[in-house]
Amino acid sequence: MVRRSRPVRRPSRSVQVLTAGVLAAGAAWLSGCGSTVDGVPVAVERSPVGERIDAQLITLLPEPSQFPARYPAVVLPPEAAAQAVGDLDGVARGATVEPADCAPPEQQYGPDHTAVAVGTSDADRATLTVELVRTRSPLSDLANQLRRCGEIRVTGAGPTTTVTTTVDRAPAVDADDALSLRRVVAPDVGGAGLTQRMHTHLAQIDDVRVLVTYMIFGDGPEDEAALRELFTTAVGKVAAA
Image (cartoon, rainbow, N blue to C red; front, side, top):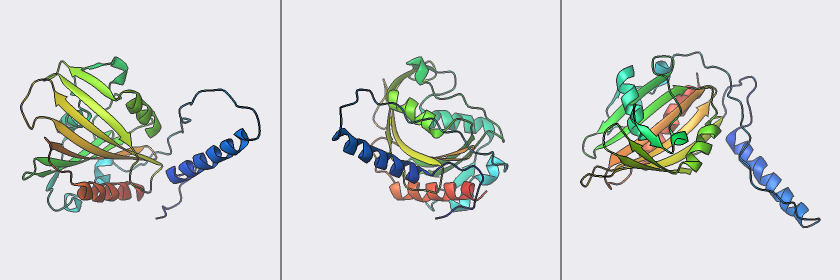
């Protein structure tokens, strides 16, 4: 899939991965021809965020009719959007996070900053959420934070919980960068079915971050096909802006 041309576009994620593989192969070949070089691994270089997408975020959300059929959807007003984002992060507004530097990045709400649409399957107690965020921070910054903050404690806003996050590779999409994460929010005290389990695909396109999350309570099966379908739809609509 080919996107329309944009100025000053950095290499796609697939090109970055391929380049890293070529460099690694070259390093391995050179190591057989000379002395060993001491050192430690370093984080991937921080890439600048691309140009601003001028369209209003709410217009870039998938239409409710574009959600998978089992998930009738609505677009949330700003206050409800803020609450939904806290649910997906596992960190409600006003909560305390330990370690403190593992708190989610500060986020603004309102038409030009965040837009959220949610589809709900009552039969499964599951939701599919599309969140669009305008940001000048590259997705690699978030990935680095999540990798060092695999487990956090959240207190002070509702029940005390342990939030566990693992980072994975996202499905291939037409974006500047992408990743996936799995997150479990487990309360210290609670009965069966109160643990939230989430699978999120993320993509960055210029200054708009796309997050699509499947969330279910308890140990129910994941609707991976619906998640992937909606992620592809959401990324495609932003990429076409």
